[in-house]
Image (cartoon, rainbow, N blue to C red; front, side):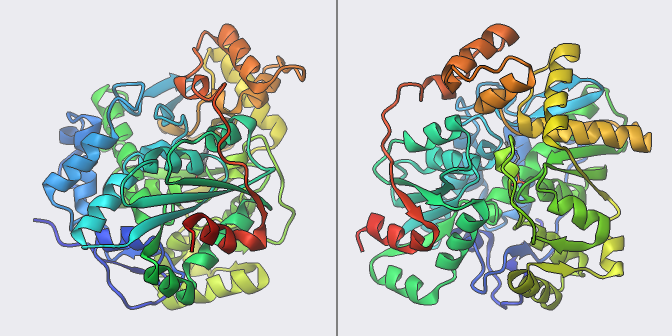
Length: 497
Ligand SMILES: *Cc1c(COP(=O)(O)O)cnc(C)c1O
């Protein structure tokens, strides 16, 4: 039996929570993020794991980190999450193109990688509520840069004992992303646009979360908050699985030898996906380099280059909106770890970030970042990557994946590093059809995004996903737009309290 894993705050709050308690809470009481007290090692060898299905791999990984769930509970969650909602049996297939392996994480219900974690989170959460005898209704509060919102809505719609409220930047998501969210069915769902950007939405949500008065008022009305954002460890843990799985797949197919290291490239926004890769590495997957790809909002690129995190800059709207973020929440977990699991240091950096919008880490901490490489791609480079892969390698990718592909190409040219490389492919090209068509030189302003999807399908031979077809003519059910300082009242209005 492996040792129990407990979770505590990155900022010093002394409570030690079991996994199910941390998942229920989402955020630590002091506003910090939950981190594991140790990172367990995989129990089976990569060769043994390579014989397993995605679901069985998920069990092998998740049982090590979610130690208070029973085998029966975890297997129930896994089998209900990773089923025919995914349009490929493999759940996360790998495609080789132009000398890299694209790990396609977008075959779930809402065609973005958020489905990988959000199809299981509702099961983990409701199981946690049962285990902890929670009587309150759980209110999932979510800020989205476009993809988390829909994936969380799809996961939680009509789940008994839960309500879900999603805030998105009214002018910062793609038309297909918006249509996906505002047409969401389910009596327990609520979608609200805010006049602000993603960082405003995320800051507002965190504020609501950490307000103790509001929490006790909610409790008196029979509600308690939780989060579906990647600050919740229930998001992070399922994301570790596909890094283990993809390594094993390469091994099984003879593309790498035993113990051979790989690199991973991750198009990054809130730093959740790449942090999951980092944890996979700590658990024993041989990963040499974590290549963090940013778009023009290149705070992380600058951070890896200089050791200073500085959000004081203009927020740029790009064609990869799910990465338009200046405050990458999950970086806090990495900061905590490289400071030597030091919550005092972490709390001080986060206070500087909130006060001055910046902080600078020590040289000693920077040394621990040598396995990371930060890169960024401009809009032009992003479009070039889409066009090059399609025209020269017959492989169609979306704008976010293109940021990663472009950064990887520059990295390989610059470093000469020929290590086998997995690129996280985070969304279907059909979620960002207009940008993809523009990149291919096939843009047409007179067409709406759905007509463009039909044209893209003709051009590429890749059929329009069901997730897009099903919202084409769907009724708009959510029309509320609020100022960013009205988020709390919007929550209360929806709950009728
Ligand atoms: C959320 C998202 C990202 C960024 O992932 P993080 O975990 O926030 O770094 C990248 N691409 C797509 C398509 C996304 O939806």
